[in-house]
Image (cartoon, rainbow, N blue to C red; front, side, top):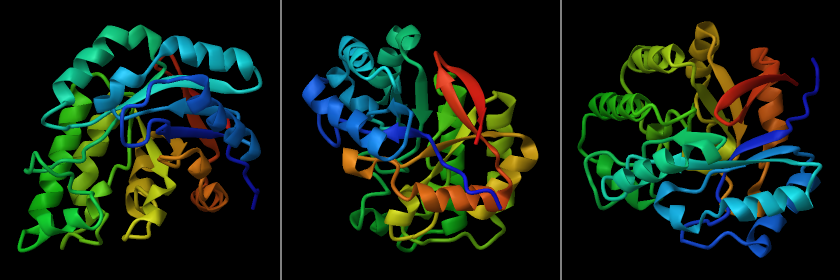
Length: 263
């Protein structure tokens, strides 16, 4: 079996969990960490609620300082009921400056709390019909896709984060969503973040990966790093997983155009 070297991380958060204005002091450590991790292509995808911190001129300066790296300007569009409208408006305004937009769902029926908060978010599942929650979650994923403002879906089965599983086969719950994604030529990320969460499982799970392969969906590779030390986290394990599935290409983006590169 070929030992793949993964070279792209397409889910990173230089600002972490608060607005921090882009500057070389904030961004250069990410470039340095990419180099140490043998990455050559990274996308900055801060949460859309922190869009005020994004500075395209600073990204250009970082590119000039690090010509050996491909540094993509991106953002993560959430379904945050408070901030999502402003996020969509910002993305529409800056679409031509962006290379890559992730779409994600972190909110179910509570506007004041992300369901994936650990451990607090687990309470949103107590006494609830898990199959119905899964169906509602994937409906919200399709709504994000339908905005026409995303290139790739982040942590596609994030709903499993606390370990809650549907009673039925996951394929029947996700199939419509995968068709929705494929019809729009969008990608799905393979995210190592799930291995750091209570579920201790890659996002998405094996069955969803199998179905995505059958449908011809492209994959990006992602760590969901909220610090530069997490960049490329668990990528050797991800490389082995991809090899086991026979995934021999990874998708990168330039000005929203998907490019399939051989591993």
